[in-house]
Image (tube, rainbow, N blue to C red; front, side):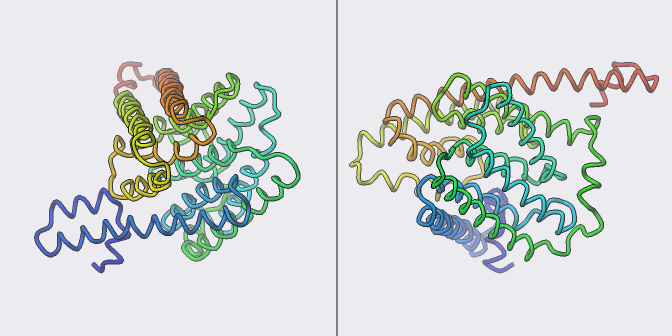
Length: 363
């Protein structure tokens, strides 16, 4: 395996190889892990800078969101024909754009309905294989871009340009990497097969409801940076999550520690060094596969952007508060769906002549 091939592996896999290897081979895996993180960081800075310089600071969020999509598209497609996939990508990007200026003026009930419908559509289009992680990537991008709303003709034109450029970049990578994949499966097969009796679609609805509910609560209470509530709820409801309570606890501890460290750093170190905190955290984030550490490190990037608007201490407090509220929303939605699945399973078991107990055990 070449160095380049090693760099394509995830941090978790590279760390496994480091632990299992000896001497020279271990050194190569360490180099691959560090170099991977450095190059990803440099690419991210350059990529996001394009959007900031061309379309203004507000559209750096489009750069961040589309960067996540771009990195995902390199490895994971949507599970159906390339033409239909490009159409889905166009429709998803259109939702990012329209909801960026459309959501802010909606009544609260309609706001929830539009958020739920938009997220459900995005997840249906992109997560035929939830285990590959598309759900988290596209939900994150949607929350990030639409939560940073734009208004006025100039800002709308800038957002249109930014979303169009992200669509171009992602579309080109899609064509290069997946033009021959899943050619026998079309988008109408995905839509036609939709049924809440299937676990994939149950999970999609659970995630969409959890995020939409968290964002709606934040919007209704006019909580600053309510997108953090959406991120927290999302992180608990992803398909890879099994121990939701422990995951919620890990996130809450990580966010608290990360926020406190960030606030202390801004009080202890010269202000001209602050710009280094985000990149340093990004580099470290590329080295760790652990959720707890990721929760700590993500605070530095999030708070680096927020403290300028909110103040240092208020930003830290709001970061902790919003994650706590988002975690509660995620836990509540997980509980509701657990009860729903039990009821559905009992109903299916009774229709098939099985006892509810035996059917419940089969889950």
